[in-house]
Image 1 (tube, rainbow, N blue to C red):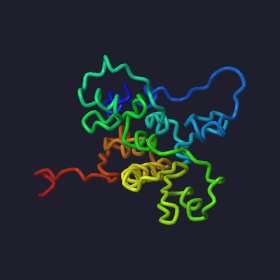
Image 2: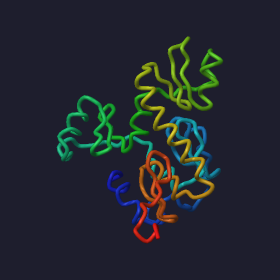
Image 3: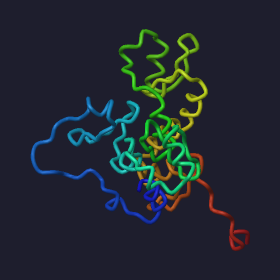
Image 4: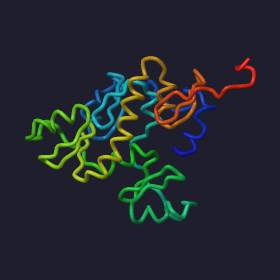
Length: 212
């Protein structure tokens, strides 16, 4: 369903994406819970992904950080069925599987392969500093993408590409959260009609009239 949503992004409006909405009754702050579970706090209007604050409910909803249970009998893609059993990412479907849970983007899949770690318990100053952004510590043989830790350098290098994409998207939020969504999925912003590829605005192709 999430993959279908990403394909439909150019045609959808924010009100169709199931944004967090006001519910009757008192609200509780979920910020402490959000650090580990990637939930949206309606009290402070913020979500956390890998410890990074996201203030756009639109972007947070589309990122969909949770793993989803899947029934392999209803997975049409042969590669996805294999990855469901063994773990792995299908580049055609853009869905990854970790411990029989489906993750609907490269970012959330690679974050699931890391370990959420409280920076306060890290005894290495370099690792604590890396947890405020990202980086690899040669002494500890540990990489941090926000509060997600990796001990496999190769996996860290892959994950960090998507994590950097997230940081670019977050920078774009105050200007246009539609563009921030488009940055994450190499798509088109439904507001600005800008097309993004590898986090960059792709110029429109020159038309015959533009050369005159």
